[in-house]
Length: 306
Image (spheres, helix red, strand yellow):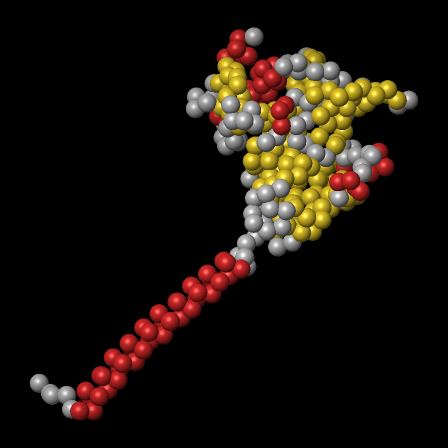
């Protein structure tokens, strides 16, 4: 076995010293990083604004799709109904968010968006500017807000027009296999796809997708029994993985008679917006208010029996 000479011993010793110095350097670097982080935390450099969006008092997630069913007691296709989104924007962070922009996007062909000339909007009092523009195939409403301070919330209830029900029936002429003419009653249901986008300084754009549906009903239970069976079938057929939806029962504010017809002004807000959830068996709907209380259970078997 060869013995180490003095040069080998010196090289090994030097290597050990270098490793020890490397560890010391790493420890000093880590301490320096942690010290800088502590200084940044104390100075507020890490503080930032955090945006949360709510629908009728219920927090919702960005990049998600939500079904909203509006129930109008005096709904008529001959009346122009005006209602709104019951949306809220909340800064739950520790820093003011500047240069806030909120975009509402509607399908242009449905003429849902209200032009600025049709609304009395007092931006001097609210410090909010509203701008209407058409960018085919959408109508877009832009709200400009100077800033939202930490811990503050702003209600953005953009008003839109509802001109017709989302459901109905129509007679369709057809022929049987043996060439007889028949008339078939076909039921239909559709939704208006809309989008809300939020941006702000140092905030990544947040997008929310909504399917708006409008029905003529007189109660929460009637609305649920009317729309829930189709939603249930979508869940069972795996066309949808959402076991919940929202309903809104707008409050009538006033009817305005004009030369062009009647305008029905309604208001959608937190106390008339409800979250509806299926139970595990998808047989019962639980109706939850903005306080989180389960105020009603609707059994879908009742709707099938009737």
